[in-house]
Length: 119
Image 1 (cartoon, rainbow, N blue to C red):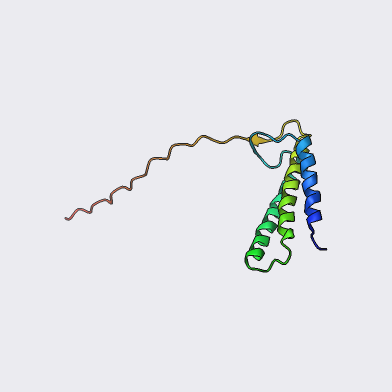
Image 2 (cartoon, rainbow, N blue to C red; image 1 turned 45 degrees about the vertical axis):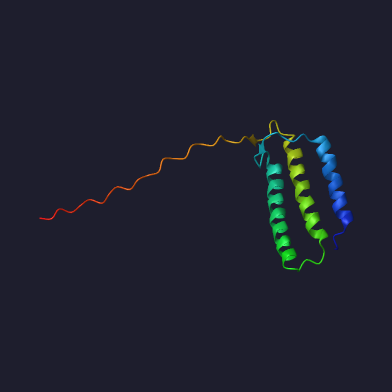
C-alpha cells in the first residue's frame, strides 16, 4: 500500500467533521474517560511513537514517501478526536486544570560532621 495525499485529505475531512460535532474541553484532557476512549488514547500514543520513528527515518534520509509522516500526524489527530467523541457519550469527561506553581522547597543544609574529641 502506498500512502497518497488522498489518504491524508480523507483523514482531514473526518477531523473537520468531528470538530463540528464534538465540543472540545477547555482544560487539559485526562486520558481514559471511558474504556473505549482509553483504548483510543493508547492507540494515539502508539501512533505518536510511530511518528517519532518516521521523523528519524526522514532525518536519516531513509523516508521515500514524505506523505507517510503527514498521514501519521493527521491520523493521530483523528484518533484524539474520536476519543473525545467517545467521552462525549460519558456523563462527564475527565479534565484537569493547571496547578498553580508551588514555591520551591527550602534548601536542605547538611549537618556538620561531629568532631571527634582528642583525648
